[in-house]
Length: 358
Ligand SMILES: NC(=O)c1ccc[n+]([C@@H]2O[C@H](COP(=O)([O-])OP(=O)(O)OC[C@H]3O[C@@H](n4cnc5c(N)ncnc54)[C@H](OP(=O)(O)O)[C@@H]3O)[C@@H](O)[C@H]2O)c1
Image (cartoon, rainbow, N blue to C red; front, side, top):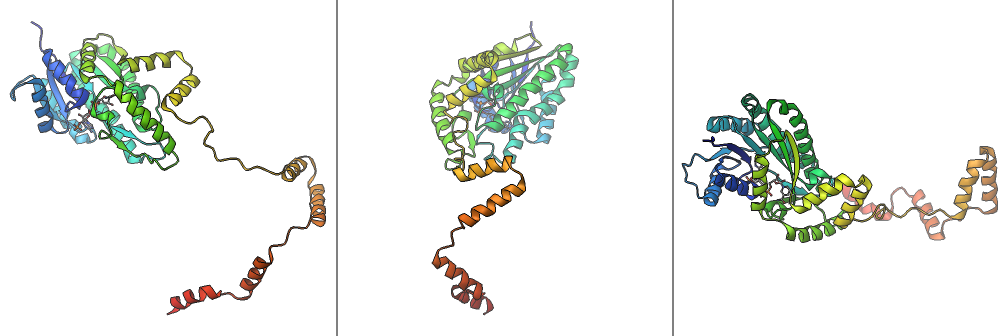
């Protein structure tokens, strides 16, 4: 008889994590749901699976990836509940929108804590046991943003890209001990993260990137119509957990498959243009401020200054002033200048002066 395999899924309270926990539970796995709120998360999971409160195959541990103490405590709790897990799925994630100029550094810190530092810390704590057991799979949930840096989600893209690179490095280290790493490049699925409610926004629609935001927003809403059901993702995750390769990177969803294929085949320049056009972003230099136009005299002077020695240029300058003296200022402003230079305090300012001294 085969032993019950155990899997830790972070962010199993909703979305892809919840669908995956439900699927794997029904496939006979012992599921450890690592969630920020155990009460809320387990209530949702029990409702989805039909599991009883004392079901030993559906367990919850508290985990906040942004809190190092919570991560360390979660690793201990996982050990107590299931010993060495057979699989760990780093699924929890957050989304935020805004141009690099618009996003505060706190967001970058939270993004990296959620998608990289937290998962790395949890893995570090679980690895000794997994290495000693000589088995286990670590699955990292990446996205299109982890394959290419996508405009106006730079913090998310950077964190997912870093997650992928971390996974690659880790795979090389742990493969000799019989452990495998799988990266799932996930397409668009119908969960909260792709909605306005599930995305923290820093976009200024009236600011310099307003045009970017308007077109991306419009196209993003259209793209939401192709979002797949989370249950489909869960099936692909189940297959990934059965994988034997020391390292694999797979797409989930046809949009992710198309991106991975084109990114592999096409040159960087072409991919940049494809992403730009797909997102409806303005072309290169199209939003630059208009250049200052020089008149023919100014252009001729610059040309002469390049070829003639300085004394010759000086003489030419004096000659030009002689034949075309600078235009004097209009009579009104000349009188005003004279008046200002005579009286240190103007009449209009006198009231202000008085009130200061009162
Ligand atoms: N849906 C898509 O189209 C899509 C596409 C590509 C990649 N992905 C990736 O798939 C993963 C799952 O996303 P989803 O679509 O299921 O999104 P979701 O419905 O918004 O779920 C996100 C989950 O992450 C948890 N979480 C967030 N911050 C956390 C933290 N600091 N500590 C612990 N848990 C935290 C949330 O817990 P709470 O309930 O406590 O908030 C929630 O369970 C993410 O990594 C996402 O980047 C999704």
